[in-house]
Amino acid sequence: MDTKSKTRHTSYVLPACPVEATLELIGGKWKGIVLFYLLDGRLRFSELKRKIGCVTQRMLTKQLRELEAAGLVNRIVYAEVPPRVEYELTEEGKSLQPVLMALKQWGEKHAMDLLTEREPC
Image 1: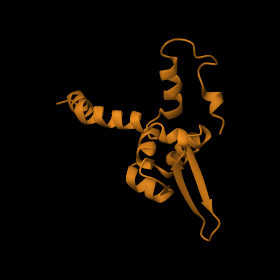
Image 2: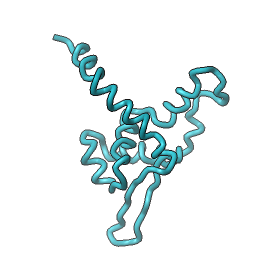
Image 3: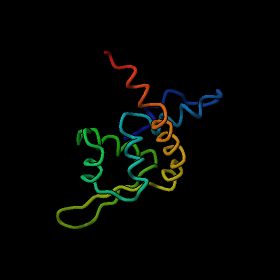
Image 4: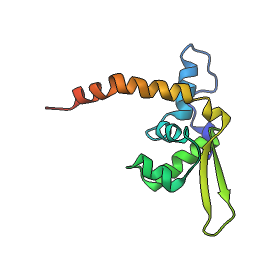
């Protein structure tokens, strides 16, 4: 999958553009969660799907392919029957650990209350 065709800009020169570039790579409903779970090491597809919970197989496959195309995730295929496939973070992917942990901490401190406040009575 070619992620370059999905980018909104060809030049990132405005001050917030590095934020937008990062969100183009890791944005989406499931990518951050996938990256977070892979911080602990390699996981098989089924293990990752089980940890995430309510993601469909099709959507998880799509998100993993996009993360692989972006250079953040490695897909390892073992030549055995049945085939075994595992996913792990690349060095670039591992460099997102402080960002993901900051998101987790912010979520623990703020997000849950904000989401609860949004729900209708």
